[in-house]
Image 1 (cartoon, helix red, strand yellow):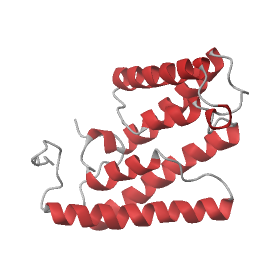
Image 2 (cartoon, one colour; image 1 turned 90 degrees about the horizontal axis):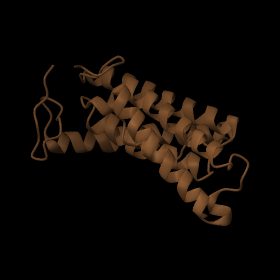
Image 3 (cartoon, one colour; image 1 turned 30 degrees about the vertical axis):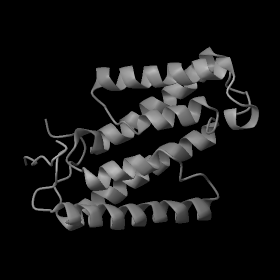
Image 4 (cartoon, rainbow, N blue to C red; image 1 turned 135 degrees about the horizontal axis):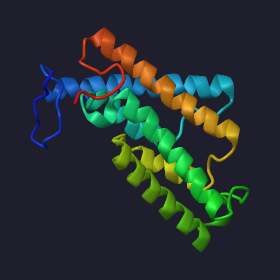
Length: 183
């Protein structure tokens, strides 16, 4: 299904006005992150983190964009998280305190830059572009979520958000890919 372009050139959902798109993004962004908050509270685990915000925005406002497909969303965040871990390992910071605790040291800045560069390059090479994954890689490379348990929660949260989006788009009748973007 082809999508029309808005004034800004972004793919729009066919048949929806800008006001309807805004309401859809507001309601389902609120609900989906609310669900994530409830899961975080019940599990006592960080099921909400900064890169989920722009991910939810893409999933509910631009569902026909390649970056919003389930494949690109999930695999983009995986690339980002693993790139962050790789940068930490190369810089010898896997067990170091986070940048929030000790500030951004020169070595931490190198890790952050390397992780973002690696994430960007790998997403382009693999055609798994998902811009919010750039925030995920910084969350990891700045030492905010580095344990295996936190990374497991991160991956589970992204999958849960994609499952919510898939269900919401199915109920709403929105053309949303089951996995890969339409090419």
